[in-house]
Length: 439
Ligand SMILES: Cc1cc2nc3c(=O)[nH]c(=O)nc-3n(C[C@H](O)[C@H](O)[C@H](O)COP(=O)(O)OP(=O)(O)OC[C@H]3O[C@@H](n4cnc5c(N)ncnc54)[C@H](O)[C@@H]3O)c2cc1C
Image (tube, rainbow, N blue to C red; front, side):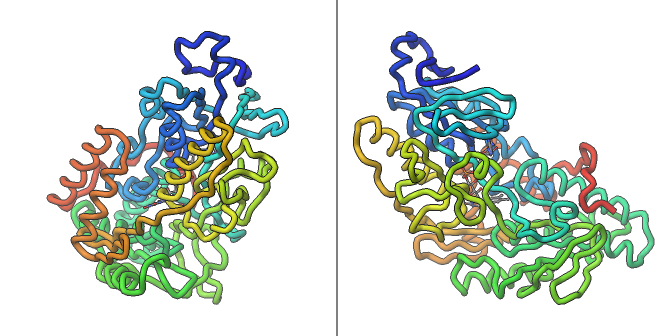
């Protein structure tokens, strides 16, 4: 089936085919932070919108590490895309993985071979884990980029603890109980902090033979700093919070190779472990190359200052997948994706009115990371916060950003429960292991 501008896009209810034929069709690839903003901003525009995503849910990535550490359940941070979009009468959803494009024919082609025509295209396909060509990462490390990754990490760690509980002390048990996080950005720091809290509050209660101190959490960072986007004072605060939780932070430590039972560092040292979680960076998704659009650094799509692709004014790229000329240093964070989503929608509306597109300008609202219970760092509009106050600010921002009243309520209740009881969510090992890093 082909959806084109001349064919009523699904979701344009009540439109006659003649009227629909005149309705420009905007296709958005990706229902992440950026794509959903485009759809929302076009909800009252005279266009038919189709959002295409490979999943039927939107995932709130900033809380993925809590799923990986049994603080939250997968369904607490996922929300059905159809439920999000149902209030927008001109917006339809198609669950499909886009495989390539016929740019001249203004058509996307899905993996199943379906063709989706467009007048305007917004590519908001996010990013994937970047292994920097490091041998062994794909085979032996866990990424943390979607719900499957988070579940795999959680199942794996819980399985290791079950095994260690029945083993005598020795090098193999020590390797099982060594968890290595690579990358000192927000994801790595938050994950290492959460694993350390799990060790402190859950391990002593749940296991008779694994002592909290038996479980080691290491955070390896190649540069001389963690949380590079934050001011020095907050970086130091984060380091001391991690140290207080017992995380072994090693700065200036480059990973060489990974194999099934160890990480070999660039200086030749070997760390025996069966758990490496790779949070060292992201790159453009496979789709970025497959579309045939101009490539940018890091496997992203190169776009101009207006977010449009050179030679294809009808195509814009936003969020993690876009490398904006003149703003290459923009961080790959949700705020950038959301602001670019609104901007892309504005430029579509301007194009319909025959007006030229406007350049994108980012308004930096700040950066934050949580390290553990009552420990966080926030740099918000020039205001530096740490400790309990920063933690409350982090909590409020994340609850507000979560989509859906049910998810907000469930997450709030879970956090309150965890806070009061020092406990975690249900630690059920569900599903088969995926083999990565398994002893
Ligand atoms: C673990 C983790 C923690 C993070 N924490 C924070 C944080 O605390 N604060 C913050 O600001 N940012 C954080 N980020 C970054 C933030 O989540 C991203 O910058 C943001 O999600 C980018 O939005 P996006 O719309 O570009 O892409 P995404 O939100 O990733 O959405 C991309 C969508 O495209 C879909 N897609 C991809 N390829 C295809 C295809 N071929 N066909 C169809 N659909 C496709 C995907 O399924 C996905 O739904 C974190 C990221 C991760 C991974």
